[in-house]
Length: 119
View 1: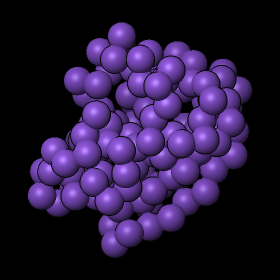
View 2: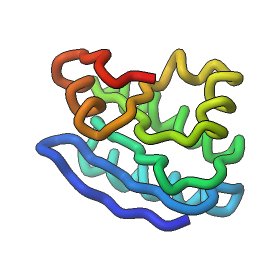
View 3: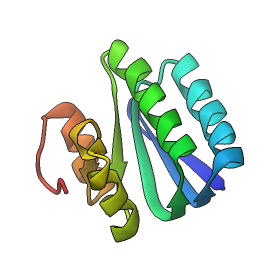
């Protein structure tokens, strides 16, 4: 798994690529913990280049979502592939994670509660 971090005001955008398996989920946990410890509680995860995410990766995201929400933040997903989106919906995780088609729509979701571009 590779990653890049960008910012838009107080929103942290994490672009992921590759596979998020057992080993890389531990790395993802450290990336998110580092951002949260620095006060970044509004996080967007860009899945455009993610080929696979396993249960360990999803567990990390759920745990970090709780931390963000405890601090008036959130984690939003963008550009999720059809396969990963189907898995997320089958596990009903779309009920706890907002999923958008673009970074702009996800950012709007933080500030104006936008439903525009939501999957």
